Image 1 (tube, rainbow, N blue to C red):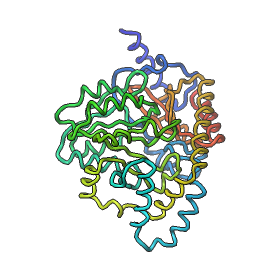
Image 2 (image 1 turned 60 degrees about the horizontal axis):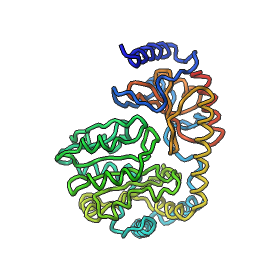
Image 3 (image 1 turned 90 degrees about the vertical axis):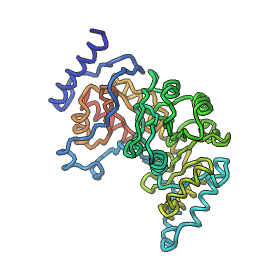
Amino acid sequence: MSDYSSLSRRNWLRKATLAGAGLAAAPFALKAAPGLLPRHAAVREIMPSLEWERAHTMARPELKARLLANENPWGPSPDARLAIMEAAVSGNRYQHEAAGNLRKMIADFEGVPEDHILLAPGSSDVLEKMAIMHFMNGGNLVAADPAYMSLIKTAVAMKAEWKKVRLTDSWAHDLEGMKKAVDKDTKMVYICNPNNPTGTLTDSDDIRKFIREVATDDTTIFVDEAYLEFLPDYKSKSMVSMIKEGKNVVVARTFSKVHGMAGLRIGYGVMLPSMLKKVNSIWRGNMSLCKTSLMGAMASMGDTEFQKMSVKGTADARAQTVAGLRKMGFSPVPSHTSFMIFPIEMEGKAFLNAMFSKGVGVRAFDIFGDDYCRVSMGKPEEMDLFLSTLQEVLV
């Protein structure tokens, strides 16, 4: 038996014991070398027990630290809030003019013509529309494992085959593996960069090279950039540059993260005019948009000081959390986003029940057979509460 197999068996036995106890009594021990991914199983999100959910729903206000949905704890910006309040007065009028104004503002920001911009109620809407449109008649989707599941689940529901390509040992997209997986039936390749749920980054130059080699009229490359704005000089890392080269690429962006407008549902896609024409032949995009959200998004785009504060506050929270986790012996995966994951020595459902019961909401995943916690970044006091609660539950 290999050293790794023995280690996995010991971990399984220990996790089973901890699940029965509900809490971990022993100190955390690293299961494998930092950054290395075992090559078995698949990713699975773990949810709290049904009994717990009935008694304690995730959205209830008694959560002292809501760190489970990658939400911005500071937003929306003051300018956005004022614009939303003022827009509500004219909520009896349709939003087409406001949509046109935001589309132009985004087009100018991205450096493309307006006929490249699809407005949507959040970037998830862009992901799902693209999945429906591309897989109406079957085909396959090449995407990483683990990855953000919104587009993938919709594609599979449309009878697409998901060709999974495991992340590399450094948690980046395996672009060579993805290239090999592409065949004549591949309708789309999905890349989430930075990736969710891992928070990790794939080199932008490598993605551009991949796009130039793989994108065709029949194979769309979809790049989900929901967390890109947390990177320094992020516009230079965006794949909008590939669309400007005429490549069959769709880029999704959102106001949910840095702009703090997750509950207001506003985002957009950048794509070639031919792709936008296909979308508009199926959906009346403007009719899914809310005038208050449109006006708030325009105000937020102009509030660059708030955006800088949001990015810095997130970076500070990451540093605070990493330091606290390492002090307790955990080894978090390096993150470039508003969340991070780290391996835990406790069965995921028992872990979630324990954390939620103490007023701290987080997520848990089974990744390649091991349990991980994903924690979103919050305000300093929320991260302090998370760390002290984690100490009680796991260490």
